[in-house]
Length: 477
Image: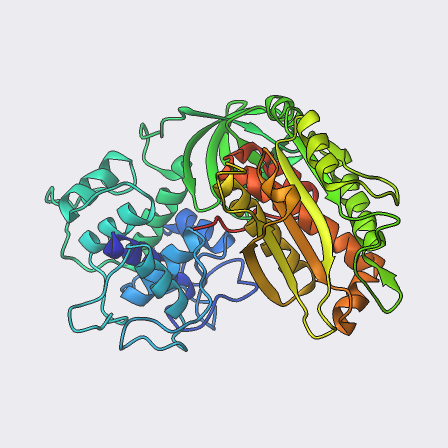
C-alpha cells in the first residue's frame, strides 16, 4: 500500500515537484511541451487545475521524464489531501527541508508507501509501473496487496491499460505523462475508459443550502451546479474529504462534511428529543467566588445565557436551572434536570485560589455507584475542556474527578466547568470581558456538539458546525 501511494504521488509530483519546488500559487494556462495533440493533455491539465501537479519554474511539464519516488509521494499526497507541510521523517535520506518530506511521512504513516530495510527512502529512484499500481491501490483504498492484483484492479477499473505484448509492464519506469493519466483517472471516474463506471450504492443527503457540486475534489475545480439541504445524492467513492457523487444525471464532487446518511429533517427530529441542561452556578445571595469587583454568579449566569442563545438556534431541546440572579439549591438543580428529562448536564462555574492559580479545568464524577454515566461524563468533560482551552488560549488544567453534588447525584452524563480563576488578574480580565464570555459560551456549545458527534455518533449534525464556521474536534482516544 505504501508503494502504491508513492507511485500515485510520483505522477502528480512529476508535474508539481520534479524541480524540488512547491507548487506555484498560479500556473501557466498551458505547458509549452503539452500541446493540443498530446495524448495525455486532458489528464495533465486536470491535475494542474487542481494544483495537484504543475510545471517547472519555466512552465514546462516534461511529460517524458521519469517519475521519482519523492514526486510520486507528493502527487498522490496532494490528490488525497494529505498534509504536505515539511517535517522530519523516519527516513535517513529525507530531511525536513526536502520538498516532499511532509507527503512522504504522511504517506508512510498511512501505510501507503514504505522505505527500505537500511532506513532509506531513495527519493530520487524512479518509479516502475507495478509500484505505481500498488501505490494507487493503497492510496485510493482498492485493498490490493500485491503488484499483480493492483495492476489487475487498475485495468478492471478503467484506470490503466496493459502493454502491446499483453503484459502490464510492471518493471518499466513510468513517465510523468502516464502517471498523470493513471492518477487523474483514479481521481475522476468520468475520465476512465468506457464501461468502467463505479457503483453508486451509498445514499446520502445534503445538510446545507447552496452546496457546490464540482468537477474535482477541491475548490480549485469548476462548479457544475449546487444542491440545497435535503437533496438525495448517491456516492460512488471518496477521496480524502470529497465524495464522487451522482445526482440529477450528473457526476462530480462535493465535500463530505455536507453529507449525512440521514435527512436533516430526521436529524432535527432526533435532536429535538435531546434535552441539554445548562446550570449556571450560585445566584443571589450566594455570589460564589469574587475578585477585582467581579462576582462569579454574574459571570456564569451571563455565560450560561449566551450558551442558551446558541441552543435556541439549534434543534436541541434545553432547559436552564436559572435565568436570573437567584440561588437554586444543589438538590433542586439535580431534581430539575431529572424532571426535565435531561440527556446531559453542564454546570458553569469560575474558580479562585488566593490569586495564585490560573487556567481552565473540567470535572466529572468517576463513581458509577452514584452516577452510572462515568464514561459519558468523562467524554463530555474532555470535549468541553478542549474547546474552552482553545477559545482563549487558556492554561489547560485538564479533566478531573470532582465529588460535587450536581455531578455525583445526577442521573445523566454530567460535567462541571471552571472557566478560569476570578481572583487571578489575567483570568479575571477575560472573565470580565463580554467577548470572552461569548467565546466561552460558543466553546461550551461546540463541546456539546463534539460529544454528540463523536460519543453518540450523530454524524448528521455536521451542518450545526458549519453554521458556526467550525469543524468537529478530534475524537477522544
